[in-house]
Amino acid sequence: MNGRILKISNNDLYGNADERLVSLFAAFTHKKYMNKYAIFTFTEEYGKNKLYYASIHLKENSIVTFGIREDEKQYIEKFVNDYLNNCVNPSEYEILDLGNINKIELVSSTEVDFNRLIELDNMSIPKETVIVEEEVTTKKPVFLYILLVICLLFLGGIIYLHYNPDILEVKLKKLDCTMEGYDKKIDLPYQSEVTIKFDRNDELDTMNKIDTYTFKDEETYHDFKDNNKESVNFDDTGTYKYDDDTLTLKLIYDNKLIIYQYDEIKRYMKKEGYSCIEGEYNE
Image (tube, rainbow, N blue to C red; front, side, top):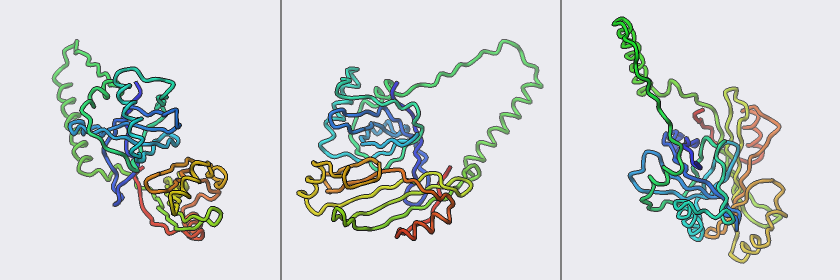
């Protein structure tokens, strides 16, 4: 099966963790343009008959989702139809292996009405098998009393944790940094957004950066895109994402630093011209 149940790794605008689970039915590459896409829904919302389309970026053990253009819908809809009919053409689509993926970061996506979610689930999501063993011996009453006490204690613990979830949550530091700039080399303004997460020792864990370049008109935009000028003008190795509707180019990449401590990185980002907001995230 090609799908997985994933936890959401990013928080909302107020820093609260999104506790929903995502049923990721499949991720695939459209070979003609080599764009990657995913189809998914929220595990507890099958009754709403909503399917979500997204273009994706893979990083280590997680998937980051972004919205799609209107013209990209046709490729995803064709894949869904072929997938449900077990006739996906391998020369047109490559289904991605999600074996090492265990979380998903939802930046944006496109919602569509869809009433065949159960079929997708049955085809894609592995089901857990629960084996119940029969009691073949008669237990003494004292054992039942002990078992009852253990069950009550266990139930009490679950109820306590339900109403006091913060006890098990480990809050770790993060920095959300932004900067407005102008690239003289290509004569374009850009906005740089950096998310830096730290571990329990307040040392660098992950650093993800998105630079968004805005073109002044369609002619300049298509000249840059059609002639693949990004490979000439940018030194950083990352993923390039064009948006024809907003005339923007996003550079998405994992940054590396030679410093690791929280205070040092915070001073460094300020020196580089970033404005940073301190926050927290759940481990």
